[in-house]
Image (cartoon, rainbow, N blue to C red; front, side, top):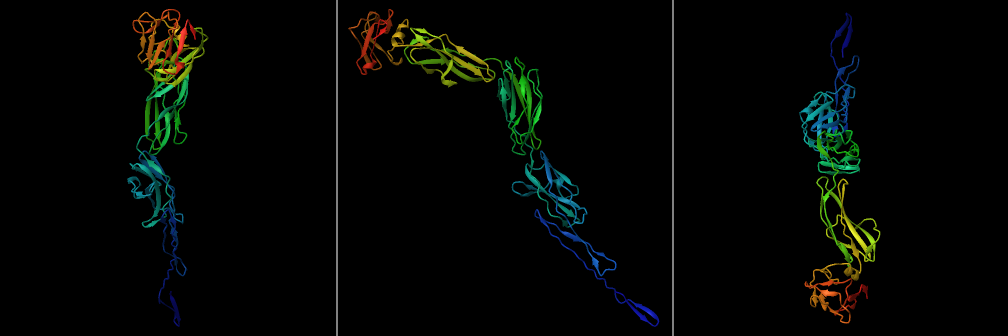
Length: 472
């Protein structure tokens, strides 16, 4: 303040004192956002004619939520600019990285360390894992805004994904075995490939099919498939016309989100050759048993491999030793891939024949057949229809047992024992045709067996009589 005095000699100015009063007005604004505080700063300036000096205050605004993208182990972080509350620009930004699962902070690498003056930074060689980032705007030396919200997780990933390829839609014949895909070129067909790509890091992104090598034969348009998110990714169609014989190749490439890739080369091999080998054996003749043993030898296939094996039979009615009209072949009770030998249950009064049907994995088929025909009839018919030594005729017991026949070669059978049962000849019945052979077996001489035997051990129902072709 300056004082002025007035006297006779005129005004006299006397400097008494100069008082400068400065009023500093500052508002300190504290904002909490993402765990950080926004600080204000102020500057002093005089106001002419004022009673004091006003000091305007400005705050550092919070950081904007950043984005983070990864290419393998290189992560790029970007964010929008922050300002002071008065619109002025901030000086720079501090970038932080945290474990996405635990929230534990990890030191950023050189590309994002210190104060970043740009709106982006890049870390190279980021440890593998899933990370989130934040940015904090700064001003001058000591002022900082609130830390931003953290970014969406991003994965640092240097490990290639794993292709898991399977056949999807198939028409005609196709079969994949390891890195070889067989197709049946004899008939037209098509398929697609599904890639259930696995990746423990950044996750599956896409699967691409390359151009076909070799040819011509199959046709395919190379495609990159990225839907549905995470897979499985189904390729475009591979197709071929009937009569194709050329084998080709294709490479399937899986890619993860971080950009790591895995390539799988597939050989596309034509297989129009049926399985080979095999044999079928069963009784050719008449039997009274209601079970037929059918043996079949293994069929082999050197390309797509044996797929299914079926034992089938056809039947016809048996009338006076003659088979009627044959029905269609049907799979017997052994089902698919039966075990040899198979005991097939049959019925008296029918004829049976069998076939062994073997298909490879793309549909080529081999049918192993036999000229043998089984006629299932009564004991009388079984005996009458069989020529030569009846070494298998055991009166119904297991062939593994030992029979004993009483009598002399060339004479009628006097007795028989087997399976623990003794049978004795009925002496009141003519036995002109049933005789004992030198091997101790019963055989038939004429058109029928004229002999009757009965059991000395119950049940009596085990007795039977055949004479002159008529069952008594």
